[in-house]
Length: 137
Ligand code: CMP
Image (cartoon, rainbow, N blue to C red):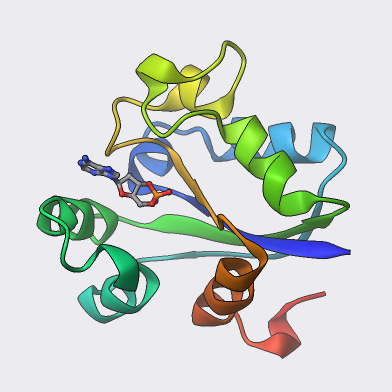
């Protein structure tokens, strides 16, 4: 079964939406294989968001993601990567479909409630930034 990394970002954790968001994954038939609350450090941000390091918004992205605790999860299921991205909706909630997690809970395009891996290669890389193999069930 395919695995993907999900982060419930500091805005959604602070707004008490951990339960709502986790329920959306479970209602969709995805399995939670690993889960923990943690605070992202500058070092983890640089590794996780390596492809965005040179982008003009990296400073803002990193400051937000390290500002308060997040919840990291490994979700598994058939086509988990695409299905989770569909559940999340567009990066900016203004463009996200009704009923998606970002439409329901995101504030804007940067404080946008959730992150998910965008390809099998990203998932394989990102899962192991946050979890060791023995923490994944
Ligand atoms: P995420 O899925 O975590 O992956 C990269 C993140 O960068 C993305 O979600 C957004 O939160 C953020 N992002 C993308 N574009 C912008 C932008 N133009 N300004 C600020 N943040 C952005």
